[in-house]
Structure formats: structure tokens, C-alpha cells
Length: 403
Image (cartoon, rainbow, N blue to C red; front, side, top):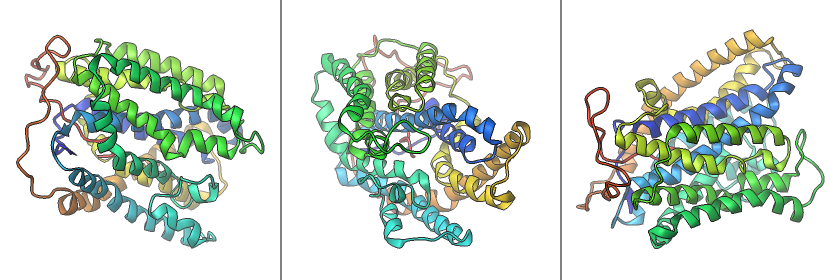
């Protein structure tokens, strides 16, 4: 099996959501990397971490959804794996060596044996902080993505065997497990010593945040939600009420900071509803807050932006003065400028590395294959209607969350 070739004109809101998820992570790191005065940063910290976990959870659930939405039946798994690896590794390898060069320039002491696991994206399988956060910190989520992509053919086959009438029960079960895991971590994992500034230990944080098999629950939830829409089981829940639920979940996250329930448990259900709500709005030509040409472009470079933004923030701060802080207004203006630098570098990485890499390794000569799976029955998702600009929304296919 493999995903269809991506086309920016199809399901544009999902591309816009990719940017939204990446931007949330950018905001998280902006608020906690020392640009604001300490008292301002302390006030922002609960919101920063909630925003960051929201962004990453968004990526994981969205990735499972769009890969399932655009799957082609009957194609070999090796073709899917080839495309995913061609997508992930070229950008990652380039930014990994860039991070290495910047760390040497900054005079950091490096241990190659601690760094190499991150190059191969296997560095989150053991709870060792100096390995998980080595060099380019954000690559911990790519280690989870790698497991998702390797497991997707099996996960999709298993979910596809679930009768349509039971898919909502499966989704509810996954959500329940994700929401119960913090209690399990508190009850069964060591309670001391705490991580700095958090009410949890390294092993608790590792299990709930960066251990790939646990985060595969989020990815699998995305697969199940896509199957619900595909099989005609969607409940016509719109983007606006889904966003309202997400705001409520975010408020719970912030109120629980810095405990284990300030991570992904309060937002998993709202995100599971938001993504299919937006996808079906695109199919129907209905309202979506994630549609727009600028968002499409930013979504296209979002994977590259995700990889470079932390390096820009950390080393940009070093250039401007290590340890220097600013008042709220100049700090915000400075971060806006660094976001512009991040976007420019992401565009260069996308054009010079990501696109050529996909052409070279990710797009072998296509084999004759059936057309993509049809839309659900008309009573679930009606035939596309003309959009506001007079165009008819295209058939449902979308890039992956890291496409």
C-alpha cells in the first residue's frame, strides 16, 4: 500500500492544519528559551507547554488520518515505506549536520555516542534525557513518526478489519487509554526525582511524551477516525464546535500544569473530532478556518520549518546575546523576525532538499493500480459542491502530516 501523490489543491484545510501544528510548537519554544524577562516567561510557561503538546498531538493524529484518507488499496508496503523515508530523512540529515556544526561553533562539548542515535531516529526508545534531547531537540517526534510509518501497513490492515459499526467504539477505547495513561504513569513509575519545573519524573515524561509505542496510540486514532468518515459513520460534527471543545481541552491542560495531565490527555478527544470535521467541510465546500493560500504555502514548508525553528531560536539568541532578555513588546517583535528567518530557511530546505529528495527517491514509476477508495455514502458526505470561488472541491486526498 502507499499514499497517493500529494496535490496542494486537494483538502487544503489539512495542509493549513499542518502549519497550525508547526506554529504552535514554534510558539512553545519561543516562550521558554529566554527571550522574555524571567517573570514574563514564568507567567507564559504553563501556556507554552500546553501549546507545545497540542501542536505535537495535532501532528500525530493528523498523520494517521491523512495517510488513511489517501491510501491506495493493493499497492505494496515497500512503496509506502520508500516514500515516507524519502520524505523524512533528507531534511533530517541536512539539519542534523547543520545542528552539529552550530553546536561546535557555539563551543558545546559533544559526545558522539550520545548524538548518533538521533541521526538514525532511534533516540527516544530509552529514557535518557541527554540522548533524547541531543542536538536538534525537535527530532524526538521524528523518532515516533518513523515507527508510525513502519507500522502503518499493519495498523491500517487491522483497523480495516473492524466493522464500520464498531469503529466509534474503537476510537473511544483509544481515547480512554490515552486519558488513563497519566494515572498509570503516576501509580507505577518512580515519583522522584522530578524534572526541573515539572511535577513528573523523567520516566513518567518519557512514557507519556516520547516513547514511540505509546504515541502510536495517537497515530492509530487518526487512522480510525479516517475510517469512520470513509465508511459513512461521521456524525456531521462541524469545525466550529470541534474548535470550541479544543479550547476547553486546552484550558484543562493549562490548569493542570505542571502535572501529568497537562500533556495530551485533555486534548486527544477534541483533536480526534476536529480533524475529520475539517476534512468533511473541505469535501462539502463548507466553512473551514484552515483554508487559504498563505496557509497552503506555509503548510507545504511546515516539515522543514519544524526542523529548523529550534536551531534558529537557540543560535539566534546566542548571536543576539546569550542570556540577554527583553521586555514583552521587543521580545515579541524579535521572535516575529526569527519566525520570518525560520520560514525563509524552511523554504530553501524545502526547495533544495525536500523536493529533490522526493523526486529522486520517493516517486518511482507508478504501477497500474485501482483508483483511490470512493467517498462514503452520500448521506454521510455528500458529493462535492461548488466552492465560493466557483471551483469544485477535488476528491479526498491529502498529504501526510509531515509531507
